[in-house]
Amino acid sequence: DGGITQSPKYLFRKEGQNVTLSCEQNLNHDAMYWYRQDPGQGLRLIYYSQIVNDFQKGDIAEGYSVSREKKESFPLTVTSAQKNPTAFYLCASSKAARNYEQYFGPGTRLTVT
Amino acid sequence: AQSVSQHNHHVILSEAASLELGCNYSYGGTVNLFWYVQYPGQHLQLLLKYFSGDPLVKGIKGFEAEFIKSKFSFNLRKPSVQWSDTAEYFCAVSLNNAGNMLTFGGGTRLMVKP
Image (cartoon, rainbow over all chains, first blue to last red):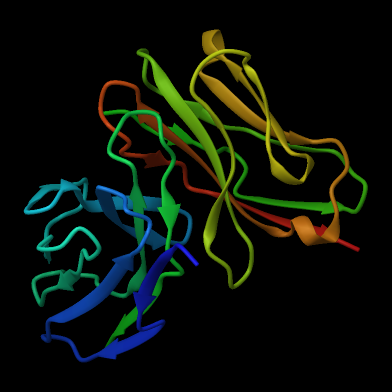
């Protein structure tokens, strides 16, 4: 089955710790994205990558970092600099060419206390 | 920067009622338009999309949306909702000349009472 996997589904961390969220896709998509979902605010773009070894900041990149060493993988690190990290994080992918929709993973709910 | 507005944050309907969810965006150029749905406990999935052509777009599960360029709107409609339509609905826009990056609206939570 082709799709996007995110692990773990739930993640708990203490304040001040960095944490890395996993995202893997087997859709052979070039582009991958990370969003943060908060109630009433929809999804907001954190980082995106159109190709391996390249990525760009989205609207709310502060306190986050990413890497794109493999086409299939786009891990997101939530650093201790992120002031309000508790949220639902969604990973997505799409073909890089124009006019394609994004496909989403099941999400990771991060709680930082 | 572009923005997307969904004016209805919560909607409660009885089964068989008609549904219309509003979506307006703030960009004057060529856009691609999407409606995504998030059923309880499930992935965000695409309901329908508009890239060009007929402004009335049919999607899955009986949903449709109409692109009205003069009103910067892409409202979602369904003539008769079912209990299984209970979900959160998101409108999203991408700029035609900027890859596939999406700007999302704040979402509308729909509850359909049986």
